[in-house]
Image 1 (spheres, rainbow, N blue to C red):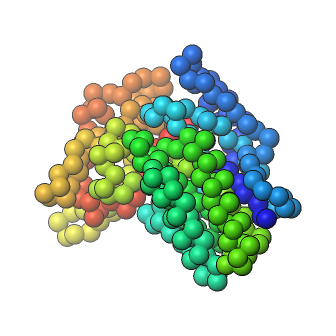
Image 2 (cartoon, helix red, strand yellow):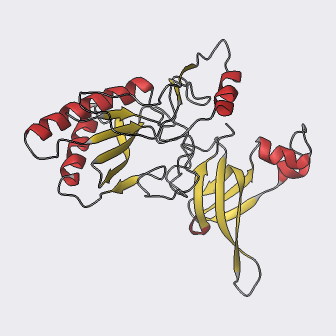
Image 3 (cartoon, helix red, strand yellow):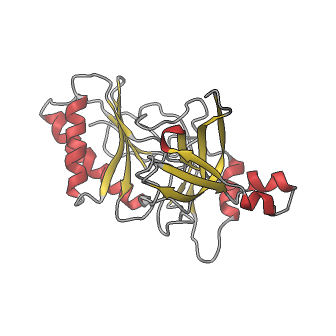
Length: 276
């Protein structure tokens, strides 16, 4: 029997936890666990694991009752299909990882397909990392109960596979949500997350010669044109943009009226943006 963790894959420093606590209201019950950031199912020796803390059952401000892990992966830039915050599948090429993926897909279907595999990754050190999303929620945010239920069911299936020798006996399982700054699939996810602020990295033509340069910003999606495969952005009403108008001031009229039109293919990265 090997180890199973429910983890946020990141480190929440005390300052960030304080910010989250400050946002609590009579409508939102924030419960926190800061001892280790991991929950283990099953027996066996506890593997060394990166210590972290997370908000347990944190009520997402957009999606009541949901839980989102806040990832702080400063050293790795996310992208679509990275098998992490960008979703997708990455197998380490071991003799057991395809079987582990098949089992995970069976587990997903056992929840009537409501808990979908957002990303799946195997590591050569016998670790499985799974991120799940809840399709019945608009933003796909699973609750802690959802994550624990998926973890327990998957762990039980892996135990059966271990007994059958179809996977090794020392597998470590980590299950989490897609994260608060998940990558947006262009244009598939636009309707779903249209009212959320997004960090956008794009390529813009600078002159008639066809030369281009990269730009980025924290935007809101204003409109999408599927016929021309273009979208229009405005500045998101977030602290980073407001501070450009002066500390403590709202967005200026010029900022509110600013617009940028980009083609889908010019978008290098679009992900949700969190001020926390």
